[in-house]
Amino acid sequence: MPLPDPLTRGELWLLQQSAKWEARSFVADRLTWKRAARLHDVCRAVVFACRAVVEEIGVLEESGALTTGTAEHAKQRYHEEEQEAVRQLEEIGREHPRYVAQAETALAANFALRTEKALLEELYEKGVVSDKVLAGLEREIAGKLHRVRHLKPAESASETPPEADEGKRSSGAEGETLSDLGRLGEEGPGVDAAPEDPDEE
Image (tube, rainbow, N blue to C red):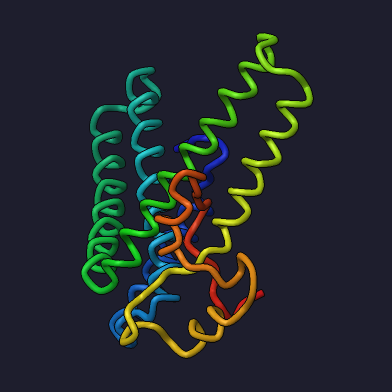
């Protein structure tokens, strides 16, 4: 059964296996915030991938490429995978509520920044803004996006591992945390994915 481009069956399988592997780590270690960040990202990817596949299955069913029975069976399979990923996301939320709230806020802000960039480019195409203004604003937006990609989740003292404390001692954007979102509010920060590990380059 064909899958929507660029998603491949192998990529979806890898996402699913990664989520299941991280879920086993959850039981053993009760999720450090680093594992929470990884698993949160993987589970979100699985949810969106499954929804994309289900949508494509519906298109194939409508076109007659799949029988109703086959389509329903396939949809059920991916609905189950999606529900499992959602369940794991909820479990992360219970274990690390602060991290999840901050990550979701940053993701939403990232979307807003990228929307702002797209609108700016549209204004440029219509001749409303000049080349110089466009270049300056694009540099500003790019700087904000880069800055927030390096934000790290702020956890309570009991939740923050030693390596996270070391990360906080570093200078510049690398040492900031997602709690800076409030301070950066007007700048509209955002992230593409979960924050990087403090001990990973």
